[in-house]
Amino acid sequence: MSVLSSYGTSQTGLVRSENQDAIRSCEPQDIQTLESHGQLYAVADGLGGYEHGGIASTLALETFFSNFYSGSPRKSPRKLREGFQAANLAVAQAAQRMQARMGTTLSAVNIIGDQLHIAHIGDSRVYLVRNGKAVCLTQDHTAVGELVRMHVLSPDKVRTHERRSVLEKCLGMQLFVQPDISRHTIKEDDILILCTDGVWAYVEDNEFADIALDRRAPEQISQTLIENALARDSDDNVSVLVVYAAQLTSSPATHENNRFSFTQFILGRITGKTS
Image (cartoon, rainbow, N blue to C red; front, side, top):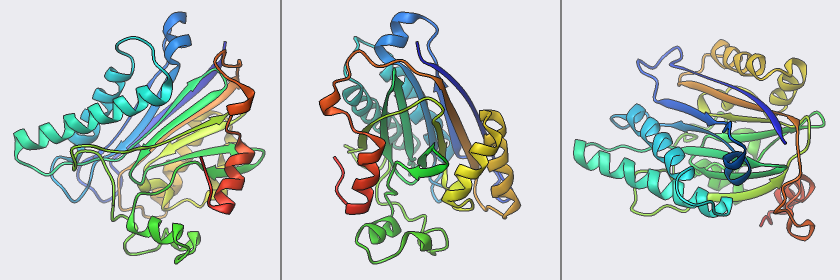
């Protein structure tokens, strides 16, 4: 049985008057649910420029987790898509009732055995730390992120770009959403870091790896990342959720010929071709 340890923290930060971020995790205790659905972790960042961002992020996570663990077991990608659509509809309906504009990012990871499934929309991020390196497994759904994908802007310019936070996709703004869905095989000693842009915009990718490898414990990693972001005058809410893969078992549904490995992902990032 896979053994994971996790810790998350979310703070208002130095500038904002309220926390519009939200984090959530579920590590089922009963074996049947654990084997059929696995563990689930997610972060959400309510849109700061709109009303009720905190309501949007919290509602999105509550709806997403409830949908994911309800009903009969299905393949993870389908469950993730269904959960995102349910969360999107819940936020949109709440906005209509309150006559307000509401939206939120949502980045979630589902771990079953040694299989990692990611669903993502917006500009929160999921990092994988392995062998001393940190790789971002998500793409920013922002105007600046699109410039990077078009090779108009280099990745190292994203953090300081004036339009960094201009979202092109999020939950709650459209009737239907298409989250990015990907699958990876994880290994023992891998560390996953989910965080909102109030953190990653002030911490370089290589620092994620350095901090993770130096601290190891999820609580220490999370707190150090928050402290670093605030020390560099982050002007946003700051949220981090860290998952450490202490021990893994192979997923019984895994077939070698359709695995999407970490190496394949790296090559895809370099060539621009990912599945």
